[in-house]
Image (cartoon, rainbow, N blue to C red):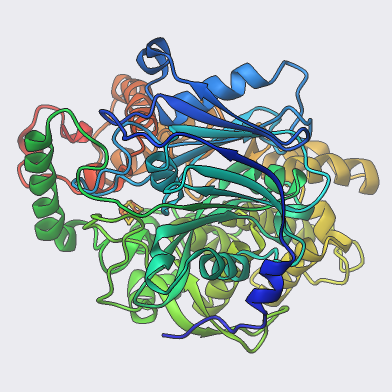
Length: 579
Ligand code: SF4
């Protein structure tokens, strides 16, 4: 294991900070999973205030995504665009979030109006920020307005203090700024785990596919780990507001911090689930050793792995991206949970990875992942079958704050356009965007991060490119519509859905665009054949989004609850619902 290479002077960076606004608040314990208040920050006026959470709001909106959408709804109007000052970044957990007795209870939900779709996007993300925000006193935070200079927002959850500070010298790219801020805001090595940082990166600044990185401190590796609120341009809005980072610091977490109503039942249920995960994961999913990348060979075998811009569902070379390849590269036997108490621990990492391209070329870094969607998007879909190239793309996507799914799907689209003569080297800023050319794909991403050449066009997503190629190059609009895998402006995530009516519905009936988290039905439909009739597919398209939304309202990760099935699951009347 290695540290990311340090090339900064932390004291110099700290000294350049100037507090622009400070706000103190009363510390109170969480009661039954709620603080009953949210934090509102306006970066234009620098006003910081607390809003109460009335009982009605809890009853109607529960928490998490519900609270986010309520706050966003109250803040914007029908004419609000993604870059309007009133657009907000909302971050919320939920009443169960932060509890360490259940596995997978550290999720935050981010919402904003998306640059890609023009409508609300929501993403759930691990890392410590959401739970620490909650135990610092807030069920949610909303950030409105635009700053006139680069800022950091710092919440000290032990002192009851919020600061907006000018931050001119910190890095922008996430793997560096996260490390800088964990170091800066912790008094000693031990305290680093009490800090969490939200950041974006240079790619988020110049594209519409920017993501947010939520950190947690990995005390074994002595480095921050990053989890992504990936879809729809959350990081783009963040950088448009000139936010370099959000930092929360909280110590004092215990198993009772969430102050639940019924501790005994909670512990009993948690224990049952921990046992199921430990006993069954290796037989069912191998999430503890490989993570979601275990899906690659299954999808390939069932003709569901997108290849060459969703033209095909499998490829002879896909074996080079199979789970055993990742298992060899992931460091094993380290606790890889993205929140305390997650026995599933699926957040794997590649240590000491030496970069071949870009501004950090030659450095050895820690890469989080890749997860299945990154392998499908940045590997098989653009026909890149070199696992080390996928790891490098994964690293740069994360540190630049670029969504791996959108990047993968749009790169496959660009390659398809190139192979069909719509694009050429000149139009692509000097890049030869042929199938499988991973160096060109990486250079495209570096162009996005530098805000130059073709990176500026491609970084706006497939929908934008479709219009641009018709207008500028006289391309056939119908052909581009046929090969551009986007809905509402959002790039489709990495499942072949043309033979799965259920997944096709799951993608294109969603509120936000074709992302699998609202209705991930591909496995039930095509692998397990649990919903064979039209009626069953329609029923799944109703209950699955309800079920997934419930997780997002609560601040829970669905993986330990849904992907690991109890040993007697098949005996239930409706095993597909994992009752
Ligand atoms: S299952 Fe994985 S993503 Fe979910 S909480 Fe656990 S470590 Fe995080």
